[in-house]
Image: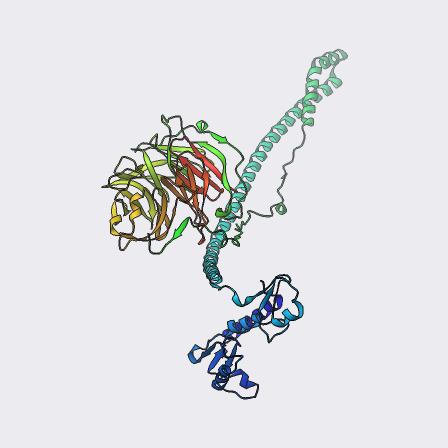
Length: 628
């Protein structure tokens, strides 16, 4: 039953007054409240929880003698609470709105009202659904809910503080980018101005040369005209009629040519140099736009929609790079175009499972079925481990092929640390290191190992390798696996499963994945577990949480693991033919996010484009699924 408006206001006023007193450092003197009515200020030695009043020694004694107040709960001396606000609030909320001195005792469901005995007699005698509130259940469940809410709000406060710090960092980064952009625009505009000046010089020089040529032509024509005029004038003055007739006829062609030359010169249009199509500064309103990616976090139903699929426990159970023609690559649209606008929902709340693209990774130099055993998304693009053809392949985020490099064996896992990639193999006791940029891949060196590497990840800026002693990477049998943390070929830390008896499930591990600054996730056949890593003690400590097959959410032969920007984990079930999502929230809501996909062994999450990229054992394609 909701509190009425007046009760809400009273509670808020009481809390506000108490908070103001605390902030101002004020502490009310504790005198007996009944004695105040007689203008007597007796020091309080007790507190009645029921009446929400301070009492002196005499009043405490009378309180116990009086039959009406005999059963009240009294707190004395050191038991007296420092903050009586909750007791006053309980008292205010427990009394009748219309009879302030009488406690509420009944609930009328017909009128949706909480009433006292007088209200019941006066207004609710004929109501059929009146219940006594004296036998109400305990509030343990409500305490648990409030405790859970308190944990959530504390986590949210930490998150907001981290976001505040992130905003400061991002502000400085964006400011630097703006300054860089302004500088680039200035340089670009200066370059455009220099180009215009160069064009101006070229046009001016060309037109000047043409005009000088035309002036020379005019002077030549003028000379010929002068010669002809002098000839005709002399002929008219000194020549006979016969001379005039013959000479004029024989020079008529020359005069005609002079007219045509002059006409040609006169018909040439005057050309002026001017700036046209000038870009107006007013049209340039912005150089870029600021984007504030907002995630609308709707967690109202998290408490009601919990799952028991995850159990949280404290005490736990060198060849040169080969360039290939991009035209051989194929992108097959399956259902819809790639989404252009990000959803504001959390990944755990989004619908998924709709395949948007199949991307062919097999190239013309491949002779076998690819088999994609590892995918890694990095700044330089999408890195793919081709098991069947023993290659490391690099594609752009748009799946344009860039390059590939042959490997010494079939790759089973890769991890990246900046511009370097590390690869382990199914049949080699070594790890190779490759350097990668946006155009090429080349081999740097290799690290020899005593045991067979199963999987690797970057942990604490170092390389963490999961080894097997007897079984191979593809087996689900138990093995005495162990972990090494290395800086180059130097072993900084060696962690054996046998160091800790509570880690019996680690013997099933075939993949390792870095989860956060101090913990890792291991794929353990039918479950995945998150363990704390103590590099000083050189052992795995407690298991923080685990996720396993549960009812319809079957997980068999767990392999590749990935994490999105919100901390959700994605696990490939190779034999169960599905991909699972484990929620990052405290109240975990877990699910199978992709079903009926043939033998998935690796997965990657592209947060920027809201898509899931999956690689399968016997396949030449990457399977891309959308989030909605």
